[in-house]
Image 1 (tube, one colour):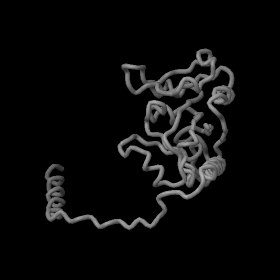
Image 2 (cartoon, one colour):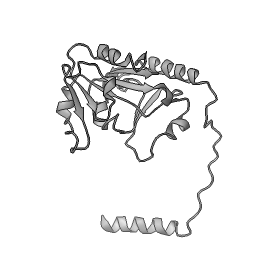
Image 3 (tube, one colour):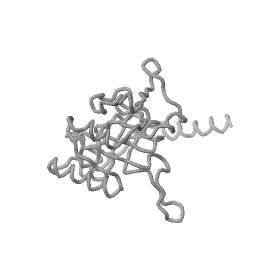
Image 4 (cartoon, one colour):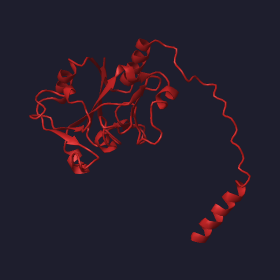
Length: 213
């Protein structure tokens, strides 16, 4: 195995010995939107609803009440350590909110069994692409580890409207290339088996998107 690998690497080095320059890539696709901000947000909402996500419009003042309603009475839910606590319901303690952190110095990271035992997760988001209806999470403190947005069955995702762009190139420009990126386009679902839609396969079965103005 080692000899074969050495031979392969030797051939690759030989093929690249003259360090050929990569050709310039012709980028004829749109890289910047000309649409009004309101139109872009409407487009995102249309895509999300089409993907069977629920969309809500809130302000900073009304957000805690909306999250409380979405969680329901007595729900146990998890939040990342960097989430803005003013977003959460006043009775957070009664609802058993659990803080998760990838840094054990600030809070313990929850295991899969613990995450599976909670009803929901509340996170923020980095950027959203209206053209594809895709929300990007990049592991920021207010978004948390990938696990907390993939294991619980219900994801409440807050999307500030100023983070919504129309095009994928615009969205990627806001994402750190090395960040652990999760891209969400509606609730997790697949139709691979006999073309029957099954939800909650690779992530949350229910997605509530709160557009925060």
